[in-house]
Image 1 (cartoon, rainbow, N blue to C red):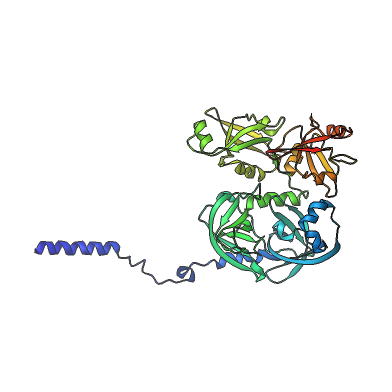
Image 2: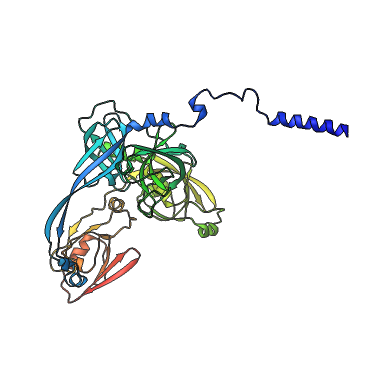
Length: 468
């Protein structure tokens, strides 16, 4: 009994020794940083480079009497309704931006300044400057401004690198939500490489840092004080914050800014392939252990992809060692690289691994577009058509298909508009004759048959329009 008591006492002392903190650890906190976590030092470094942006634009409209909004009138008159009384109103909007060069170069969202007649930038210290638009890129929703009469030595934010960003990293969102003034919110990187339906190039950074209207164009900052991305949009059901915000990665910002500052235009690499994501079913049929990558099902003649040695049936799994989940990943990886460089593609071909070096080239603007407006007494009067070439296909965000005639514009008072023809439609046949060029369209329209049959392709559908 006595021995048991001694052993118990020794065990208890050992346990206490194991769990008790050492004398060194039992120190009284000697600084504020030891008492609480604070982002103050990061904010002091980053916030002066984040600006408020105010815009004004004049919107011109034409008002019609209410009776002309009646569906019966619209059905009868179609696009031939009266123009109405001209009116105009002034719209004000607000957003945020980031100074990225000390001489007054500011990056923001395109939707913040789109259509603006006047742009005013307010710095953190309340100084105000008029700004001019250097250029914008609608496809990535980015714009670059230059402050007028700007002093030198303005505070800036250094662009970060998406490759060093990880899910779970702490980030700060800085902007001007609802116009209340500069505001800082914190959160984490919730996900990387998010693709949304409205954007074909960006692989967004998703964050739960609070982003609200007015934050657009503001900064998403890492704890080392670098710009992770430009806050762009939120997922919401009622217009308010729901914990899901999206930022354009700094890699894409760098590419767009370089293009707009050096030539005023963003020129993206053209690959010349069509492909589809490798889902579960395709992966199983190919013998892959998991989904991922891009299955190549089309290669344009003379394209960089052909020059690199890509083949139909290849699966591209990575670009410069970065894995691809789907075609959107491939577009993003290539869009953030400058024309003139080359990339290494990791390819699976018939069960074997292949590495290919592919040059990055601008999409060629050939064959000649030959854009033409159709006039005269024809069913297609009032539209503009063009030969689809790689450059035009990039502008229209569609796959390049040779020997294609595409509708680029439709005049609202033209005969073709009444037939329902829309921009982006492809003219396939006229009266049973295949169409492969603008010249063939104009030649066929010079005839005067008693009845017209126009075959139009719209997406995956083929529409046959009969006139006469």
